[in-house]
Image (cartoon, rainbow, N blue to C red; front, side):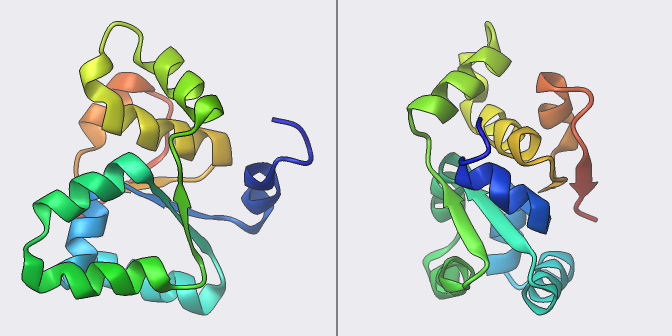
Length: 139
């Protein structure tokens, strides 16, 4: 990533990467994810949402909570991280012989590339990919 890469510029602002468990928690109005998101809005912090985690969250969230998930996505500080060519390479290199861990790999790549902690209810699956990754565990 060069200095013109928009992800590198955003890293200066600071923020959090939300995995599927954090997204589902927000949609289900769980206290910690709710507090984290609204604090980020007030502080002007960016919330990065890997597209693979978002797809998982849509699948795991009941239809009655889809509006809440959409509220998060519509916030001006939310950025959805696409699984584009460059990200696919970054994710694939982290996965090695475990391609079944695509979603976790995408989350780890987003956190690592941005230098931000990952908010997750499953830190073990993230640390299995990168033991050094900073995780903000959901209670």
